[in-house]
Image (cartoon, rainbow, N blue to C red; front, side):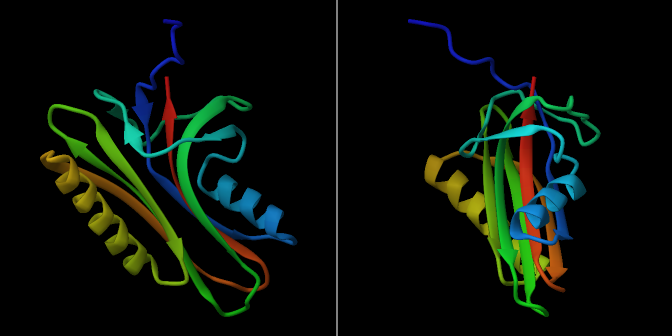
Amino acid sequence: MAPGLPTPKKYFVTAGAAEGSTPLNAFDNALLAARIGNVNLIRVSSILPPGTEYDPDLELPPGALVPTAYGYIISTTPGEIISAACGVGISRESFGVIMEFSGKCTAQEARAQIESMIREAFARRGMELVDMKIEAVEHEVKRIACALAAVPLWY
Protein backbone atom coordinates (compact mmCIF):
# COMPACT_ATOMS: atom_id res chain seq x y z
CA MET A 1 0.00 0.00 0.00
CA ALA A 2 1.34 3.45 -0.94
CA PRO A 3 1.92 5.95 1.86
CA GLY A 4 -0.72 8.63 2.26
CA LEU A 5 -0.46 12.31 2.92
CA PRO A 6 1.14 13.38 6.19
CA THR A 7 -1.22 13.67 9.13
CA PRO A 8 -1.60 17.21 10.52
CA LYS A 9 -0.28 17.75 14.05
CA LYS A 10 -1.66 21.22 14.89
CA TYR A 11 -4.84 23.23 14.41
CA PHE A 12 -6.65 26.40 15.37
CA VAL A 13 -10.23 27.62 15.15
CA THR A 14 -10.90 30.96 13.50
CA ALA A 15 -13.62 33.19 12.10
CA GLY A 16 -13.76 36.44 10.16
CA ALA A 17 -16.18 38.63 8.26
CA ALA A 18 -15.68 41.41 5.74
CA GLU A 19 -17.13 43.47 2.95
CA GLY A 20 -15.81 43.48 -0.61
CA SER A 21 -16.55 45.04 -3.99
CA THR A 22 -17.52 41.60 -5.36
CA PRO A 23 -18.57 38.32 -3.71
CA LEU A 24 -15.10 36.87 -4.33
CA ASN A 25 -13.41 39.94 -2.82
CA ALA A 26 -15.72 39.69 0.22
CA PHE A 27 -14.71 36.01 0.60
CA ASP A 28 -11.01 36.87 0.23
CA ASN A 29 -11.31 39.71 2.75
CA ALA A 30 -13.07 37.38 5.23
CA LEU A 31 -10.20 34.90 4.81
CA LEU A 32 -7.76 37.71 5.62
CA ALA A 33 -9.82 38.69 8.68
CA ALA A 34 -9.64 35.05 9.83
CA ARG A 35 -5.81 34.92 9.39
CA ILE A 36 -5.97 32.42 6.51
CA GLY A 37 -6.04 34.71 3.49
CA ASN A 38 -2.48 34.12 2.28
CA VAL A 39 -2.59 30.32 2.05
CA ASN A 40 -4.23 27.85 -0.31
CA LEU A 41 -7.07 26.05 1.42
CA ILE A 42 -7.67 22.39 0.68
CA ARG A 43 -11.22 21.73 1.86
CA VAL A 44 -11.47 18.65 4.05
CA SER A 45 -14.29 16.95 5.88
CA SER A 46 -14.65 16.91 9.58
CA ILE A 47 -12.25 14.68 11.49
CA LEU A 48 -9.47 16.03 13.71
CA PRO A 49 -6.58 13.52 13.78
CA PRO A 50 -5.74 11.89 17.14
CA GLY A 51 -3.23 13.82 19.23
CA THR A 52 -3.54 17.03 17.21
CA GLU A 53 -2.39 20.01 19.28
CA TYR A 54 -4.50 23.17 19.59
CA ASP A 55 -2.30 26.17 18.76
CA PRO A 56 -4.32 29.43 18.63
CA ASP A 57 -1.22 31.45 17.65
CA LEU A 58 -0.19 29.16 14.79
CA GLU A 59 1.17 31.10 11.81
CA LEU A 60 0.85 29.46 8.41
CA PRO A 61 3.52 30.03 5.74
CA PRO A 62 2.26 32.12 2.79
CA GLY A 63 1.25 30.00 -0.19
CA ALA A 64 1.11 26.75 1.81
CA LEU A 65 -1.44 24.07 0.95
CA VAL A 66 -3.51 23.91 4.14
CA PRO A 67 -6.14 21.24 4.86
CA THR A 68 -9.08 23.21 6.24
CA ALA A 69 -12.67 22.51 7.27
CA TYR A 70 -14.69 25.68 6.72
CA GLY A 71 -18.11 27.15 6.22
CA TYR A 72 -19.08 30.52 4.83
CA ILE A 73 -21.97 32.63 3.62
CA ILE A 74 -21.99 35.54 1.19
CA SER A 75 -24.80 38.09 1.05
CA THR A 76 -25.61 41.07 -1.16
CA THR A 77 -28.64 42.15 0.90
CA PRO A 78 -27.88 45.35 2.86
CA GLY A 79 -28.95 45.13 6.50
CA GLU A 80 -29.00 41.32 6.53
CA ILE A 81 -27.25 39.61 9.46
CA ILE A 82 -25.00 36.73 8.41
CA SER A 83 -22.90 34.46 10.62
CA ALA A 84 -20.50 31.56 10.42
CA ALA A 85 -19.14 29.24 13.09
CA CYS A 86 -16.74 26.32 13.31
CA GLY A 87 -16.04 24.08 16.23
CA VAL A 88 -13.99 21.11 17.29
CA GLY A 89 -15.18 18.44 19.67
CA ILE A 90 -12.33 16.75 21.50
CA SER A 91 -12.27 13.26 22.95
CA ARG A 92 -9.87 12.06 25.62
CA GLU A 93 -8.47 9.02 23.85
CA SER A 94 -9.24 9.28 20.13
CA PHE A 95 -9.81 11.61 17.21
CA GLY A 96 -11.96 14.73 17.30
CA VAL A 97 -14.85 15.96 15.19
CA ILE A 98 -15.03 19.30 13.37
CA MET A 99 -18.34 20.95 12.50
CA GLU A 100 -19.00 24.05 10.43
CA PHE A 101 -22.13 26.17 9.97
CA SER A 102 -23.16 29.38 8.25
CA GLY A 103 -26.49 31.12 7.87
CA LYS A 104 -28.69 34.19 8.16
CA CYS A 105 -28.63 34.32 11.95
CA THR A 106 -26.68 35.73 14.88
CA ALA A 107 -23.26 34.49 15.96
CA GLN A 108 -24.90 33.20 19.14
CA GLU A 109 -27.33 31.09 17.09
CA ALA A 110 -24.50 29.81 14.88
CA ARG A 111 -22.44 28.90 17.97
CA ALA A 112 -25.41 27.02 19.48
CA GLN A 113 -25.87 25.13 16.21
CA ILE A 114 -22.22 24.06 16.23
CA GLU A 115 -22.42 22.89 19.84
CA SER A 116 -25.52 20.83 19.05
CA MET A 117 -23.89 19.30 15.96
CA ILE A 118 -20.75 18.35 17.88
CA ARG A 119 -22.77 16.72 20.66
CA GLU A 120 -24.78 14.71 18.10
CA ALA A 121 -21.62 13.61 16.25
CA PHE A 122 -20.05 12.35 19.48
CA ALA A 123 -23.24 10.60 20.61
CA ARG A 124 -23.54 8.86 17.22
CA ARG A 125 -19.97 7.63 17.48
CA GLY A 126 -20.35 6.55 21.12
CA MET A 127 -17.43 8.79 22.12
CA GLU A 128 -17.01 10.87 25.26
CA LEU A 129 -16.84 14.60 24.58
CA VAL A 130 -14.34 16.26 26.94
CA ASP A 131 -13.92 19.72 25.39
CA MET A 132 -15.10 22.00 22.60
CA LYS A 133 -13.39 24.88 20.87
CA ILE A 134 -15.80 27.12 18.91
CA GLU A 135 -15.34 30.40 17.04
CA ALA A 136 -18.19 32.38 15.48
CA VAL A 137 -18.57 35.68 13.68
CA GLU A 138 -21.58 37.87 12.86
CA HIS A 139 -21.80 40.66 10.29
CA GLU A 140 -24.42 43.14 9.16
CA VAL A 141 -24.18 43.45 5.38
CA LYS A 142 -23.51 46.91 4.03
CA ARG A 143 -23.17 46.02 0.34
CA ILE A 144 -21.48 42.66 -0.34
CA ALA A 145 -20.24 40.66 2.64
CA CYS A 146 -18.92 37.28 3.67
CA ALA A 147 -18.84 35.57 7.07
CA LEU A 148 -16.47 32.61 7.33
CA ALA A 149 -15.31 30.22 10.04
CA ALA A 150 -12.61 27.57 9.70
CA VAL A 151 -10.40 24.98 11.32
CA PRO A 152 -7.00 24.98 9.54
CA LEU A 153 -4.84 21.91 10.13
CA TRP A 154 -1.05 22.03 9.98
CA TYR A 155 2.03 19.82 10.27
